[in-house]
Image 1 (cartoon, rainbow, N blue to C red):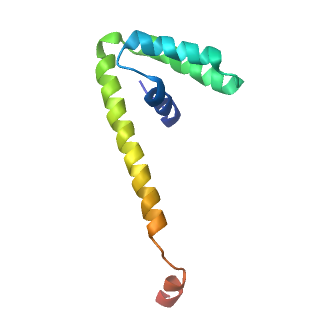
Image 2 (tube, helix red, strand yellow):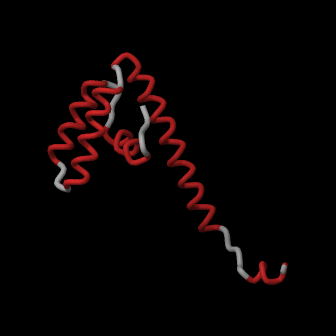
Length: 97
């Protein structure tokens, strides 16, 4: 099953180790969503979870998703810190040329 980064973010925020609870929660979130495009994407994710994923390997998928998204957040935070603490100047390029 292929997931976009947006779908992974939704699952990171709302999924739990229990397959049935996750699918039910996604359906409830679809019902609570006001924006039509977001509602469509949430419903597609809920249907994708129901049809393309079996309950037997969901627990492994869930833990792998959590590890992947934790690493993503850590790398994103590191990049932000690096950008804030790096002061490079355009003048250095002019001197090299």
